[in-house]
Image (cartoon, rainbow, N blue to C red; front, side):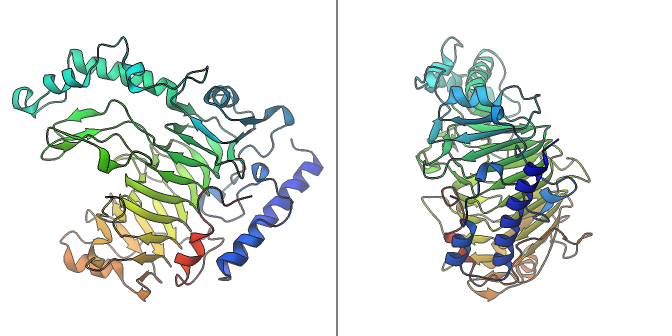
Length: 448
């Protein structure tokens, strides 16, 4: 149990955060917000999620490793140090891991850079042999690859996963050290079946699968599918993802070759929330230069009664789809800014997709629609999902996005939901100035 002085310390930090959120709710400008957010000698590593700040504040709230003793506060700058600090995924002792600088996940314990060839060594895999073995002209399109080369591909992929996948235990805070360009490149944080995790102030870049699998049955012409999300939540609860940046850079999708007429896709999701994950708050992040950005619910039969997620004050720019794609759960999307201008070859298909009876409340968000863009394509759905809400703007004008979508599509979005958001700290009842405000208060490197 925390000491009385430590509990007072936690209350003090919570007060600072709540006051900051209250200023945002009052509609103060970005400069004032940033100034007050950074005021005082506040230790980012010990901050906890403010009261009522989205679904992750429900019940016990989200405190991450705030109660860690001095023996469980680590500062790491290499992959090997990060692995050691994380320890066993089943050890729930509270811990704080401060990441200093950029950690390259594609490195061995000695710090030597590893390549795709290193992971494939000894497996018998080669891309040329794989392409020859499963060419649809000879192998057909009715079944998944099997046999020698598919086994070799899976073995090579497993070797990469062993190196780049970092399993995060319960009661953990991962936070970037301010002023150090903190982040993880080429890695995948995996939060699986654990509770109470905080991820803040980090840049996640270049999460790449060296060995995508060909699936000829995926869609009408098949697809290449990769394996790693930058951050993946699977069966996780009480997770706060705050002030992070997600990007494919430096290798963008426009550089991917095509095989069998389909893009050889090496990127999967940015931040996926699946397999019955629940009570998650995603705020003040930047999602950019990416295709399949955020998936909520792994399938149309994922866990009913879970997948409760709050997504607020984020910037989405240069993303193609899934901002988010939501299934089943109760999802609150508010005060986000969506720039749907094509960026670096990433041409948006839609932003929010509500399907499989998802109950989405989207309110006081702002969309930038380029010349020639269609409001009807900003949303998507399968005819069973709902999108309710008010106060949304498109190019500064109040717009009923659901009405525009339904007028152009046969599978209508439903307009009512069976719940009312109550955990709404920081909610601004106008989207007018979001583009300007969020430009300076989102993403990694802002907190100090």
